[in-house]
Image 1 (spheres, rainbow, N blue to C red):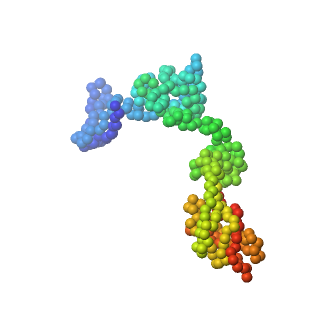
Image 2 (image 1 turned 90 degrees about the horizontal axis):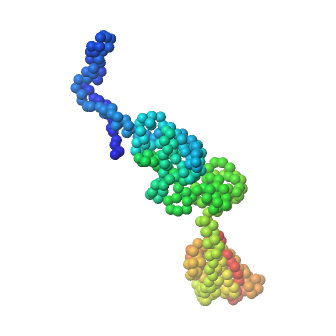
Image 3 (image 1 turned 45 degrees about the vertical axis):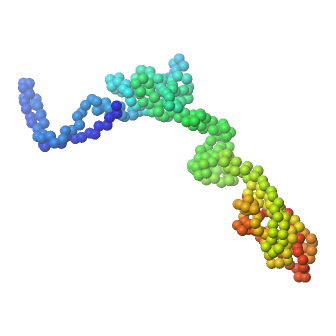
Length: 348
């Protein structure tokens, strides 16, 4: 049972008083020195075997463990001074620094010439550690459970739940060697991939550099998210023919609206435009105006009428409107017939 002890100093009336008495051993130089503290105001914590043993069990004892192999069993050999007399008690805690990787299917701890099974926790159960669990020059925390030592800080690698993906496996999946974080100071090498802690994405280095930020000329995104976003934009296509009325009396004018990703195109031909200050078409569909930008463009008079007039066009995504301002020549009367195939009003 776990126990905490609050240590208290003894409080007495005369802390520095002692009485000297003879010992009757026939040597007058040998004396008894007896405390004469007077009234004890508060008893101090007694110095007992139980308390001090408990303190030692609460400590983590660090040992160097060197591997030796015999009959296809890896033994990590170490010694803890005083253990033979003290005994291997429940909850004894060790931290072992291992020198090399374990390569055999069976691995044991040889502590003060006694061999112990090494276990690890996996999905709520205990199992023997496996080849490759110990990495060279790393430390592992062990606790004795009465029969074996249980390692509490072995990372489980795999693709199942409650496991992590080993860097080597990640490199095999991506097809590039992992180089670290982009934000780390140092050289970024072509052919390696790096993690950007800002965007949470991976990037392939396409030009050697010492940058600590993503430069699109130096790094190419390889994470699923940015790639899928690009593919979604690339293959998102919609086209619709709409008939709109103008505010100054033109009816059922035909426009072809095209959306490719975030690209928006207005295409029209033989569009009647009155020779007035403005011909404004409204109620352009929401799906087209969404994420589009407001833009000016122009279209020419397709009839070749009086000098080949040019109209200035103004698309307003917020108002969902298209306004056309014709350039009027002196003496010209009637309606312009405007063409404007493939007019881009927004781009990626």
